Amino acid sequence: MLSTCLRSVAMLLTTTSAGACYVPNPDYEGVVTQTAESSESDGADNGETPSGDSDPDGDGDPFGDGDGDGDGDGDGDGDGEGTSGASACGDGIVTPGEFCFFGLPVLGLPTIRSLTIADFDGDGHADLGVVRLDDVLVLFGNGDGMFPELEDLPQPPGDYMGVAAGDIDLDGNDDLVVSNSNEDFVSVYLSNGDRSFSEGAQLNTGNGPKSVALARLDPDQQLDLVIVCEADGVVEVRLGLGAAGFAEPVLYPTGDQPVAIAVGLVNADAHLDLLVANRTGQALALLMGAGDGSFANAMMTPVAGKPRASVLADFNRDGLLDAATVVGDLDRAHVLFGDGQGWFAHSGQELATDGRPLDAGVGDFDSDGFLDLVVANHEDWTTQLLRGSEVAGELLPRQTLTLVADVTYPRTVVVADINEDGVDDLVVGGKGLSVMLSDP
Image (cartoon, rainbow, N blue to C red; front, side):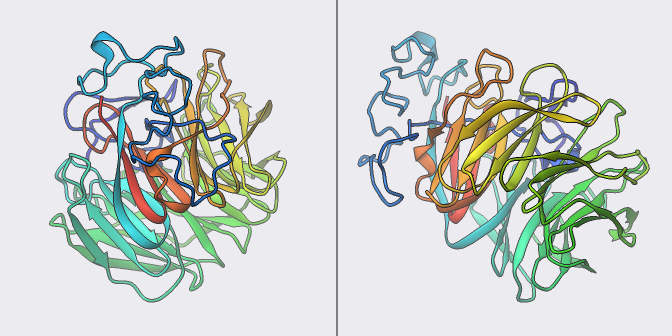
């Protein structure tokens, strides 16, 4: 388990230390800031079909201006000029505003449901946990952005949905939990540290387990498990008991059809809280933690449309966590500002996305100090970036990321510094899996 990536809880901005470093599963660390960078083209309204090819040379820049958005500004700094002097791509220098990336296909079909990033073999490099419809894979990274080894974990047939990673048995290697939505159980896989896994507990759950999270919800050192049960309208909280065991679940109602969860310090009491996206309930449910593994009743924030995923980050730079959620039926991303007491107020930003956004991540993707939002749009086969601006809390209109265009029907995104150059990278899964790697 790697722990050299330090994060500021106050501002929820990721800081990367020198040397090999990546961002582990944010639910495990208890801070839900995610980071990534990317090269983009303006795909807000370009008339492309999902199968169209606007980039015949495959360099991720269909307009040939160096940053892919057709504005003639190759370094993305708004001055209308290309990168100059010491800020050229390939010079190894990370310059605010620059986008220097290349795409790397990793897996083909079938459809990928969810992803997580962790260090499963204890070598200090980022690995990928990959959940597909009927199997679970682990891809082992070697620190340069490549994943040369793959382990196919044993599992019974089923409809696998959610995944989370963390050091459940406290042996220094991250482990894996996976939810099976049709058969109503969660499987635990314990890493042996040598790129093999032992099967741990199989935990029966409520109906329709979807998203899962691992976090320390009480004072001990054991990781605790949170399971979102869509059909029951609850989250199950199972406290860790040691020896990779978990207590019987405690159920907390969340609203109609909860599908996704984010974990973070929403109020000022230093106890982790749970933010749940309720799809048909058209609301975000916040369950504030007491620090002993228990939670208060859900506080509801209505959302126009059906939210599919949410992230927590300090978008308006006031030191308090805000929420951004993607709404799959309205093709929108909403930003809601937190007050530090558990309530969220709509910022007035309802930003257009492409068709049917299903997942989102957040970070300072262009190294300018402002948080950005990345969105996976399932229906239109696009992954898009909504950049932060100098105006606190403001996100700019969407831009399409062409370097992961080979992933059709994208539905999940994760971010980490996979090639260990101090700049975070983006992993997108759908029908296929691709990595967009930084190359400053």
